[in-house]
Image (spheres, rainbow, N blue to C red):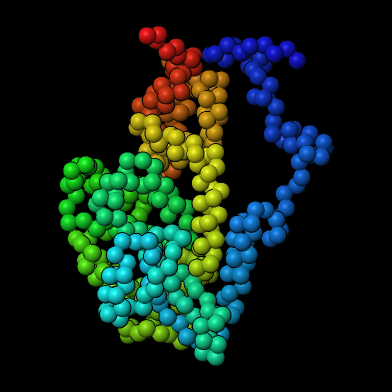
Length: 367
């Protein structure tokens, strides 16, 4: 084949485009299978990376759990504290004095998590089962929130919380008497809280100090206990039957299943090309988390986005073509109110990529 150079603004004739534009994935897969280089996927439990196998085994055990839950005749609602939290010993001591069953361990996600632990009276704590009660809390002081905003940690934490589909109620707890800090204006922190509430869909709660946080955790513990056992209005520490399944779910999610899911997601899902590309897009002006999500759903890799700009139908916006980048609709848009990426974000993205509106590569001015 003749390796003819492609002009920066793309070939004029569609038939003269590079070969990879017309060579379909289906044809490529057929050739690879014929050559023995592509094996069919194996979805057995024993296949895949170790952490993927561990997740499948945990999910399989969780699916078999509903049939034997009634054999556990002693249940307790327990508040788990992440042992890496500040002042965890102080919180543990005060919550215990308030009559709350609380333990500390290294949590896979969040800083506070509620579980129900079931045991058999004949076996004691041996063979206990732990199911999640659908609520996790991420705690931040004003200084922690300000520090995490300058970098990717804040977005990574919220992404990990949002990807944990086993958790139905995510609470973002901000512990601060005031939001004005020397290194960060209060309006910035307030905007981060509002954006977390509106765009991420998390519940946002603000407390004044550590003692206020402890009182709120005790109140949440009682509310979650009543939600798990709606027919028992007494404040009890032990129950004789399993908790009610979280609203909208068919079965309980075990703590082991949540732990394996987060470990798999942390090692593989957040390190995929799409996830890294999304983190890169967040550094571009006028591109929010929702806009980055919409763009990565439409263009999973930087190459796909660049090819659309250079060779796609929307590459020549200045000559009447459609601006495909700016017209990408965000998740949740409807026929009544269509929310798009927008022209400003599209212009900023083209400038970062070094491509003008007509798809021609921009030349960097010489010094």
